Image 1 (cartoon, rainbow, N blue to C red):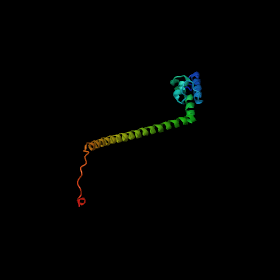
Image 2: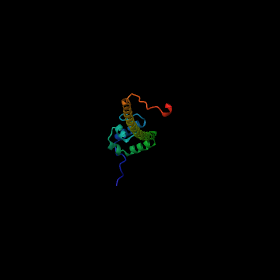
Image 3: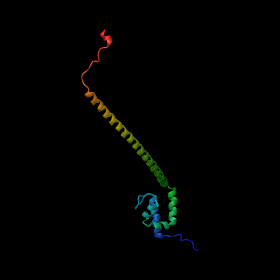
Length: 142
C-alpha cells in the first residue's frame, strides 16, 4: 500500500484556492458576495467544487480559520438574530390575526346594534303624535 498523495490538486489550483481564501478572509472578494462559505471559496478561486474538495490541506486551513474567525461568530450571531426575528414576525402575524378577528366580531355587533337602533327609531316615528291623557288621579278631583 502506498501513502495517499498529499497534493491531490495542481499547484495552480492550490494557489488559486489560497488566493481566493485570502481575498475572502480580508474582505476583498472579486467573484462572490464575500460570505465565508465553501461555495464562495471555489467560486472565488474559479475552480470546480470537486477540485476544491480534493485540496484537503487548503480545506483544513479554511475550516480552522473560519471556525476561529470573528466573521464566523458574526455569521452565527446573524443567524441567531434572523431566527429570533422570524419567530417575532410569526408571533406578530398570529397576534395581528387575533386582533383582526376581534375587530371583525366588533363590527358585526355594531352592525346589529345599528340595525336594531334604526328599527326602534322607525317604530317610534310611526306612533301617533297625539298625546292621550290617562285621566286625572282620584286625589286631584277632590
